[in-house]
Amino acid sequence: MAAMLNTLIQIVLYTLACVGVFLLFEHVWRDVYAWMRHTYYGIGHRQMLRVSEGFRSSKKATTNDRVQEHLELLLRATLKKSSKPSVSRFVMGSVVGSAVVFLLALAGVHNLPLAAVTALLALVAPYGLLNIRRYHLGIQNSYDIGILIDILVPEYRKHHGSMLHALTAAVEYLPTGPLRRSVARLVDQLANHVTPVEARRAVDKFSKELGTSWAVQIANDIEHAIVDGVDVEFSLSLTHKEFKEIEDARKGQKFARLDSLLVACVPFVMWPGMMVLFYFYLSRNIFLYQFDTPASFRWFIITLIFTFGSFMVGIIFYRPKQDM
Image 1 (cartoon, one colour):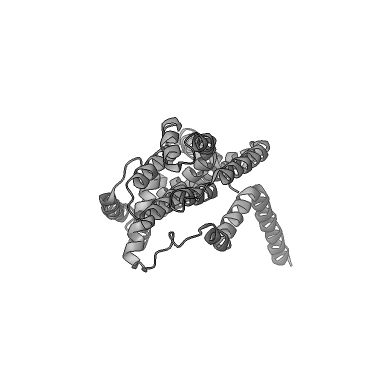
Image 2 (cartoon, rainbow, N blue to C red; image 1 turned 90 degrees about the vertical axis):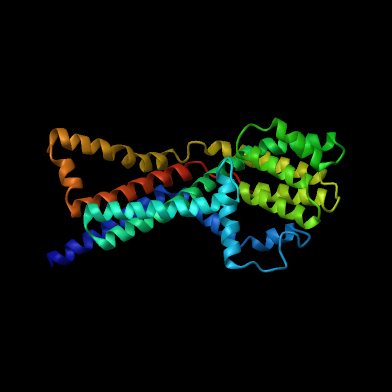
């Protein structure tokens, strides 16, 4: 009877803890659901925005080509300067770093499976960090792209419907950052394009680099203006109006996620402090117990992963993406 009551109490406490975590990160779950819905259920809508077949290639790319293109896009979107050799350097650097971590972990814990898992995490960590940075830059771009829209609308009118001249003028006014680099690359590619397919491919890369639905909308207008010769002034004005409305609605949610950020950052800040506190007031052998035995070192790695993960989750989801 006592064991059954104890189990029941544990179930109730675990349920309350799960409900508390769910409510605490409610905005995160909503963002994840919105991202999944936008990714998997919004494909048809985005295909309708592309009038021509320019964004889709008639020739199916191989798996290696898709991986190469994905990594190039990832590096171009996250790094200030990148080129095709950067992909090979990135892959080689990840492999070498993983091998070094494997040897160090094997020498530290004398456990082959744990060392292999640690090396695998070290192998995928650079790719994961770049994706996190890309997502974070996508959030930043979803706000900064309002500057591009503010500049592009009057410049498009000023240059009498010349989208290329409007984009060229916009580069000069944009602040230094990923948005300006993406627009500058787009201007260079559009100025040197020969066929409509090349222009559409450049516009497609531009929208993927920025990682926001506003970029998809603007890319659609750029394609219509440059490739199809359509006057997109009304569409640009409508996009500008929609952006301002969503921006005004988001201003009231500025402090809505401060609690989530604090909960995520407290373990990241407090854990090293607690180690020092234990050293001075509990046992001066705390660092020896933590790092010198295999079991304690395994818990150190697990704690480090979860602590760093909670910190990254708090940083990433603190500021919501301002999308349509």
